[in-house]
Length: 129
Image (cartoon, rainbow, N blue to C red; front, side, top):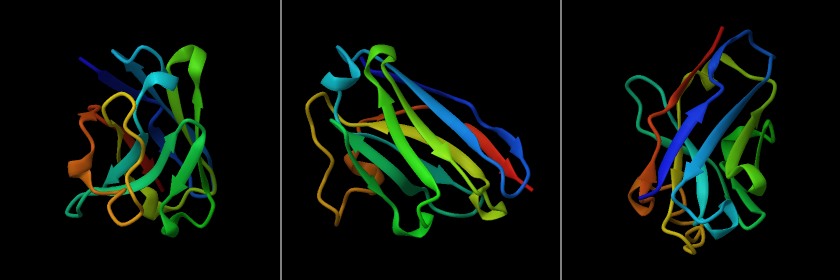
C-alpha cells in the first residue's frame, strides 16, 4: 500500500519561508505515482487544497498569490511544497495527498476535493506568527 510521510513543518515569523517534504513509499516511483498534492486545515475550518503535481504539471489554489511552489524529486520519491512570504493565515496542519498510481489530477472543478484522493499522510504543523 502507498504511505505518505510529511516533514518540514515548524514555527516561522511572518514573511519567512519553509519547505515541506512528502516522501511516498509504495508507488514504484514518484513518476509512477498518481496526482499528488498538498492540502491544509486550520482549526475550525474545512481542509482546503493548496497545490497539486502530476508528471511535472502543477496546479495551485487561487488564494496563494504565487507564494507557494510544488515540486518533485523523482530520485527521492519526494514531493515538496516551497512556501514563501508566509502569513499568519497560512498557519495550519499541512497534509500530503495522493491518487492511485497513474491517476492524473482531476478536473479543476473537483481537483481540490478531499474525496478524490486515495492516500493521505498524517500531517505536519506550520505556525506563522
